[in-house]
Image 1 (spheres, one colour):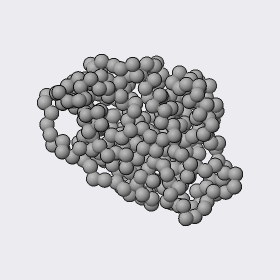
Image 2 (cartoon, helix red, strand yellow):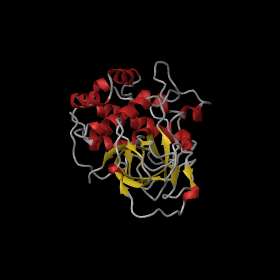
Image 3 (tube, helix red, strand yellow):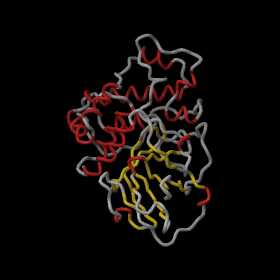
Image 4 (cartoon, helix red, strand yellow):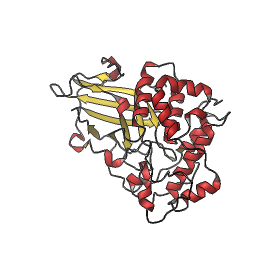
Length: 322
C-alpha cells in the first residue's frame, strides 16, 4: 500500500542537463520527431516515442500572454475568488473585479524541474489523449474535499506515466473510481504500459538525447513504484520532480512572472506558483466586458512555464491549505 508521509525536500534524481530537442518537443510530447532519422523501436516494444501523449500541452499552446497589461495597476486589493458563485462543475461564475485564490495545483510532467527562479507561467488549455480524464479528476475533486491532494496528484502522475490503473493500490483505485467514469478507467488501462526492463529501455531510448531519455526512464520507474506495495509518496515525488537549479530549456521565451494571459472568454488570468503543489491564481474581469457571467474553470487549464525545462502545472478550484 502506498504510504503517505510529509513532503521530503526535493532531491535531484538526475543531473541538470540542457534540453537537446526543441522546447515544445522536449517538454510535452511528439518527441519522436527529434529522432525520426534513426529507428530505435525494437520489435514487440511499445511505441512510447511517436505514440499519442496523455498530456501534450506545451509552450506553443501558450499564445494568450498579453504584454499590453505589463505594469498596469489594478484598483484595490483582490477579493477572494471563493466569494464568487460556483458552476455545477466547480468553476467560478465571474463578476466584474479583481480576484485571487491560493489553488491546489499539480505536476503534469515527470522528470522535469519544479517552479522557481521567477519564471513566468502562461495560460493554455489541457490537450492530449487523456484530456478528458485529467479534466474530470480536476473538476470532480472539487465535490470530493475528503480526497487528499496527494491522492489526486498520484492519479495524475499515473496518467502521465501511463500506469495501469488496475495495478494501483486498492485504496487509490477506489479514489479513481470516485473521480473517473468506468469508461475513462477502461480507456486509461487500454493505453497503459508495463514496467520496462533495462534491455527494453535501452532499445527504446538508445537514440534519444539525454534529457528525453531521462523522461522516458522516469515514467517507467514511476509505473513500477505506483504498482509496488510500500512505495511512499516521497519515493514517487523524487522521480517525478527534479530538484536544483533548472537550466534554460530550448524554445524558452523571455516573459516576466507578472505577465497576464488574456483568456478567450475575455478576462485576464495570471499564475504565480509557490511550488508544484500550490499556485496563486489571479483573475481580472473588466466592468462591462464579455467575461461577466462567464465561468472560470481552473480544471480546463494548464499553467505553462516559459522556461521549457520546468513543469507544466494543472490547476484546480480547490483551495490550498497551508
